[in-house]
Structure formats: C-alpha cells, structure tokens
Amino acid sequence: MYTKNFVNPCPDWATALLNGFSQVLLLRNPLCGLCCLLAILLTAPSLVGGALLGALAGLLTAQRRGYDRADRQAGLYCYNGVLIGILISAVLPWSAILPPLIIAAGGLSSILTHQWRKRGGKLLVAYTAPFVLLGWAALLLAEPTTNSYVEADPLYAMLRGIGQIFLLDRPMAGLLIVIGMYFANPYAATWAVIGAAIGGGVALLAGEAQGAWLGLYGFNAALAALAFSRQGERPWVTLLAIALALLLQPLFNLLPIAGLTAPFVVACWLMHLGSHLVQLNQRRNAPRLHS
Image (spheres, rainbow, N blue to C red):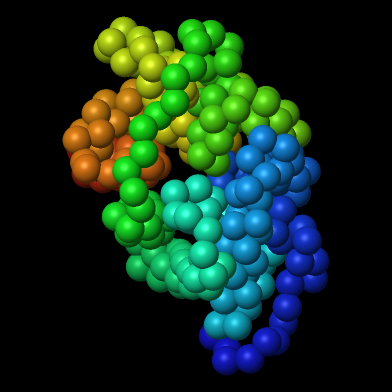
C-alpha cells in the first residue's frame, strides 16, 4: 500500500539494515548481514559509511513511500543501496557532495527496486540490476583506475571472488562473508564457494591470470550459484547458472566501464526465461499425452 507519511515502520530497523547487507547475497539473515558489515569495516573502513548511508537511504525511502512493511523488514529495499554506497565511496574522491550523492543514489535504488518488483514479473527479477544501472552512471563520473597486482594463491583468489561481491579485494573480507553465508544457508554457501572457485579456474584457463587471482571472475559466478541453490535446486541447474554468468562476463568486459554484477543478472534472467519456455512446452505437450 502506498502512503505519503511515515506509518507502519519496520519493527526493528537494525535487523532490517542487517538483512539488507545479507540480501546482497540473496539471503535473509541478520547474522549473515553482520558478518558482511564486519567484512567491510575490518578490510575497507573508508567504505563502511557509504554502505550504511546507502542502506539507510533505501530503507527510509521505502518507508516514506509506504512500500510493503514485510519487504522493508526483509532488507529488499536496502541491498542495492549498500552496493551503490560502497561503489560511490570507492571510486569518487571525498567531497561535501559525496554523502548527498550516496543518499540520492540509495533512495533512487529503492524506487527502482520497487518498480522492478512491480513490473519485472517472474522473468526479469530485480536482483542487483538497479545497482548496475546506477553504478554505471557513477563509473562514468569517476577517473579510470587500474587493478593492483597480487600474488598467485588459489585459496586467496577464491576468497577474493567472494569478497568482490561487495567490491572488497581482501581475502579476510571473503572469509567473513563465507562465514556469514554458512550461518544463513550452508548449502547455498557451499555452492557460492564452488562458483567462485570455478570462475577463477576458468579465468586461468582463458589466460586471465591476474583477473583470476584478484577474484574478478569469481563474484558473478558465486552470485549465480547463490541464486540457483538457496532453495535446494538440483546441482545441474546451479552449474548451468554459473556457466552462463561466466560466458557472459567477457561480453561485459568489452564495455568501457566495469560490468559490475551485470553478467550475474543477465544469466539469471536467461535461466528464468529458459525455465518459462520449458514449462510452456510441457503444457502444450500435456494434452497430447492424455489423448
């Protein structure tokens, strides 16, 4: 229901915000969200303010506009704000305009998420699409940066692949996020780790060694694995989602700016479309089987 005043607030704002951090991983668990928040605080403290400000802006916007209370409490209007707050803090230099910019972007991400949930249906689920669109706009304003060099280490590469979901490149960040995922959903967490490892391995085979060690080929695969394992999907479904995300990543690497989580989002849309087409085909064939 849409209202124009602060009514029916979330029963627990802290839990709603923490759920928002965990919803970046498509999971709802405040303890998982706390682990994600700690990952940012301990490995990139300069970004934690932007993450919290973006999340709070998304939640306040959703409450101000009267979006569903249960969805607000679940963190569904915070997670894109978390990501855009981190990105803006990471790529734009500090100035007096930075906090208002994060607030505006966080609020806009909440509105975009709501409209996407209303109009996207079951095929075009929002996921992190609002973050991607706003993130691309932010990257167009930023100075180009080069990736740092890291030593080859398969374990650290896998952990970086998990950490890069939150734009974090420290192995410790990935470890804290993995711990949080295991609190929320051990099965999905295991698949996220597998997805990040597969992504790194594929990058090495493709000759993208530094991208592999930095985790840049792990996070989209990990997110795709989370999206199609958290409800106990069959392993081949999860593996197909991982494969699609990895196949799409080189296409988005052709863009003049970072693709962010676009490969994950498009891979999920293709998975939903494929499932829809299979169901349509089964319905068409059902009358023939009974005739």
